[in-house]
Length: 203
Ligand code: GTP
Ligand code: MG
Image (cartoon, rainbow, N blue to C red; front, side, top):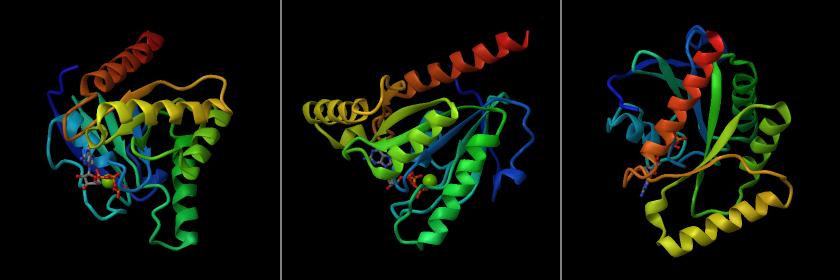
């Protein structure tokens, strides 16, 4: 897919203030600092469209980006940002959960995980919750440029093995680096195919 146009639309503090549910959208979820905003910028080929930061917790709102005038990418607040109080964390989880469950035009969520880390409790929790609720999602490994190829393959394999201890089947998996622009074509093709499936349903 060619990105002809990408524009910031709005930042919504909660689901009630998100844009009307008229076109497909894809949400980026994952722990703070995992690289959600960077990946959005990499996909749309624009360095600063989504705000990135070395300090975790940069994205605190639901940020909507309209792509090619036909679909949205949504940058969500980071899960489990450690420096805020437990209550605040729960509140985030609640607001993200409510969004994922109720947003009718959300076709698929991308759960981003840092390829250097083993399965994190909050990621596992949200994956199990999405599976239980029947919400489509894929796993996107980020920052693959930070590991040499052999250890990258080994850590990803052990990540999958850990999930397979409790899961019968794994969701689709993508390997990405915003730094090296790895995984861009694969993710955009996935979105394109998913958009097409929806439009064939509408006919
Ligand atoms: P929050 O908004 O706080 O939830 O964080 P986020 O998930 O949006 O992360 P963000 O995109 O702001 O990136 C966090 C840090 O990781 C920044 O310093 C980025 O430059 C860095 N980063 C993101 N993606 C990559 C990548 O693919 N490779 C490398 N080397 N660094 C990355
Ligand atoms: Mg961010």
